[in-house]
Image (tube, rainbow, N blue to C red; front, top):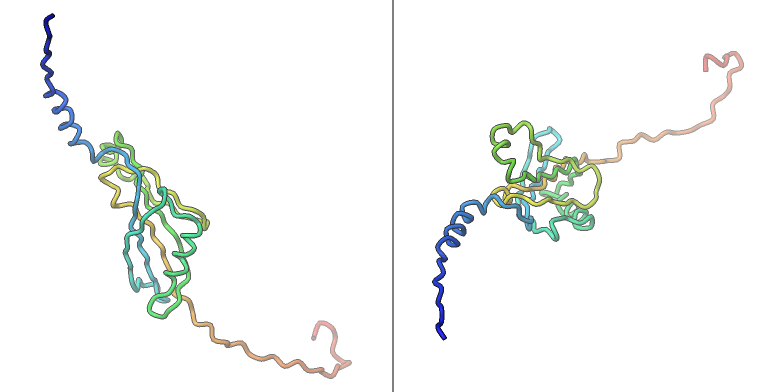
Length: 169
């Protein structure tokens, strides 16, 4: 019996893999971290300080409890208390086939989302090239000192004047 040996040509597979490597930056991937930007604004409406830190996500989201913890821990800066002004999510959820259109017409796309409720924040899959841009902005405003400046009011019985009408009182 004669054995047949077939020589396989793997060169075409290698060429496809090389070409695919050129486009791997444009595939959608899950977000595992974001940039957390904390902006402190003073009473004169000037930005006092900006903190940037990397934040690792669990299942592409920040849960409500994690968000509340973040808001509480970041509300103090240099012994001044700040109150939360807004939470803004920046998530580039552009599809690979829309990149060319985005580059020619950027006004058509808006990736900012104002978070109006204190609930979980989810990030959608992002093109690998844009993953580092995804972020969350926490904007704080400096609280006013609340010294007790109310005046005391003394109540006393006044004598009734019979000559005054009801309108004059």
